[in-house]
Length: 330
Image (cartoon, rainbow, N blue to C red; front, side, top):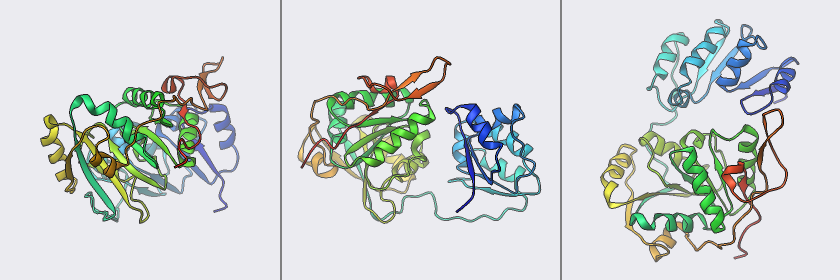
């Protein structure tokens, strides 16, 4: 577009960001936490803003950022244009609309129900003792796969297990530095056969073409999170498959959640490497040869983090990506 822009986000050095902002900048892209830090340090002023855009407002609310967002908006130019993008207008987002948008016009692109005709939904019911093996076999499939879990620790733990089984995999969540998150996502984009383990917080930041399978390893908190996760596949007219791992104990909860999402899935009883599992997901046995991450995250002498250097086993502990070339020639 020809406009100068600066990115302000946590996990990156303050000095470089401050230096970049002091140049003539048309567009400032910022996360709430880092921006409020710089505002409090008097390193940035927002009174001359002509346009203020708040993207993914509902996600900000879910993460507890609304007080910080309001503090930022209080310092922004009152006469400028304000745009708010959100998947929903509940969970506190409505308070932002009332307080900071004057006579707003609402434009709705779609409702909050799954309506993508090229997306298939399946619930795989299994014995709890088979879940680890089935998850590894699904992740070892050919193609790009995203596996969603509830917690950062769960993401790191699963990424370690998959990597040790021979699956090129990265973990993506808010506990990683920005540099590592950027590199992890770049490697996932580059590789034809790879897996990415992510949390809900990371879900909407994943914009990668060619993701053919989304796996709900852990159930999402509600139907809206199910839709956000599932929306990583079947993009731009492509087809995609969404599977939810379940057991007989939580089948009622799964059915209720998917019903609220507007989804009518197919239910299947599966065991490790049975025919139905392979047909639905492309599951196959992992190579068993551990993959070593090409990048690591280390603490610098100044207490910050950096990526690079020699790799070692133990993926999530280093913050790296379990990568490598395509593991199969077939």
